Length: 405
Figure: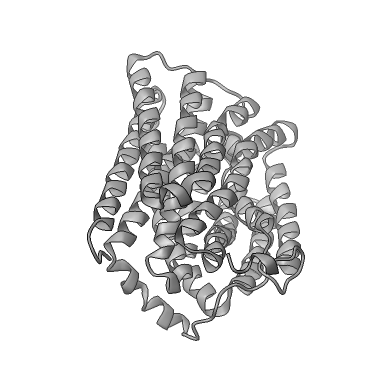
């Protein structure tokens, strides 16, 4: 990386330190899952059914997809730093609004605006791609996501404990405090890395067809969407399974809920260690196969009726492991198809990934009803993971074609 020597921590005239990128992506991840163990108590607080309260996840994911669709071209045009500062400020205000919400409608409105922080997921990847070549960027994205994977691992644990001790609002207060700290860190450390194209926002959006005509972009994009889709289905369904199937309280559910993040941490380490040597395409396939194998085993256990909390959540470690191996490479490949459109590619790819996740999260909520057990959720996750294997094979086939785009 040509910029390594110039990076100085807390110097806004140099590219951001890797820890800053980890924290930017980490708060985005924390806002997604810290409150999930509180969903049943939040439904009771606002006087709504669980499937409506679950919209605070699936609706948030849909809003996140919309944000990511436009944030890439905006950051390519105006720069990573000002966009990240603006969206962090919006997140802080929306989070305070969620804490003070007098009813479910106001809470949901604030929750949707909170999706502004999803900018961090897009721009942390785009900044890495600004600074590194394809295989090296896959390695660095792996290290960034390895660091941020600690957040979804401990987030539900913290959220469940806060809910048990102080109520669901405590998780959102923690998010607001984190948002203020992140804003200060971005101001002090995040130097600009994007080279402005000089194009207007409309002109940037008009370049989307250049990406959409690439079969490799679609392969990476859909591979990422299906791999992460299994995890988003888990996010949408696991609170119901833990509460209604296994009769867990919020603190216990929070402890078990972070199981996939344990595998994700290890997978990200392996990605950072081996992506340059192995290559993004083979890493993407390997991760998809690991996730599918773990979910296939869980499906067999669930079909036999022998599933226990330890087996259900324990085998989800393989889902996290596979995603940790495959997603950094899928994202790096997506951003490298057209390097001059890295921000747009990150935003567009993220929109497909999160939009698909929103749909799968909502579908999980629909499939899980009293008495359904764990099998509907497991089969949904297995099907999406198998689709990610097909996408990885598609990318590898295109890569073998001379001049494939």
